[in-house]
Length: 359
Image (tube, rainbow, N blue to C red):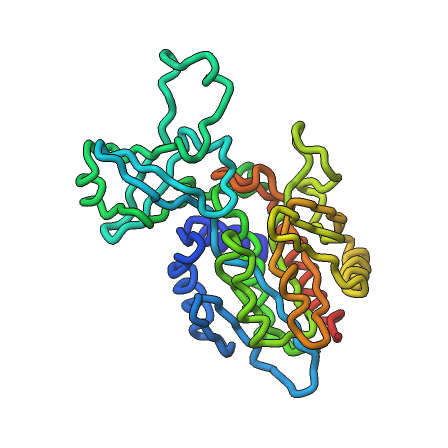
């Protein structure tokens, strides 16, 4: 199989795993199985972060950490009414405007239970409600139960979590569409890179990490940063594609190649962001040019990634960079990313890790 075929199959498989923030066990088990028969040294910390150390670690070489978070967004049960309707809160930045009518899968001790967020019947809908969306506190999920006890018997209780039930699929042999493209597309790239790098001899001490809880608080990677103490940390994630009629903030687009962050920032309480190491940025840009890979420049207020908190952790700081896959309809059940962009990001990272990253 080609790397393109491997990435498509891998990402579809990863996307369809349910692993909401703080409940990433299925992804953890999957990755442990991936690395089971390799020569990597693999650790899992107390919150679930997976770290895989390349077998060729040498004293004195720069440490390069490459990471991609494994969790996804969803909802959590906050209340069950006596007549069997489930009231919820968001887990991560679920796009509220698209939630009515969407299907979710509740993860219960009895298996998955499917539910739909209720919407007022169109024929009886008040005029003012036809062009508005209920706030999250009024939204409810219908699992076709007639009482609270029936819901409890299904295995659903306060604290039970659910993710979108939409499955990932290949569209027109060019695009991947489904839930959790954020961030399973990047995880797929990282897995394939790790498996390929096992056979190679990078000129750095290479470490791959698969952190948890990014969608909830951005800080799941922090224990890994403090343990590994990398000199360079490169994050792989998605970014908003601004090529649809309602998205014109920047020039990042699908099929335009991967994106490299010049700045991301979130001021809504976190007041943090990433200003990357410019030598690292220039190395990526020069390598992309040599490989004829288009590399888009990304400025993204409203976006925040783990490197926002990680770059200050070492006594001398960490050189950080972020690369992204342009993605339409982020934080919905039908995110779309280009296979071409994904393959190009894989190829660029492969070249950088082998030939350009020397500290």
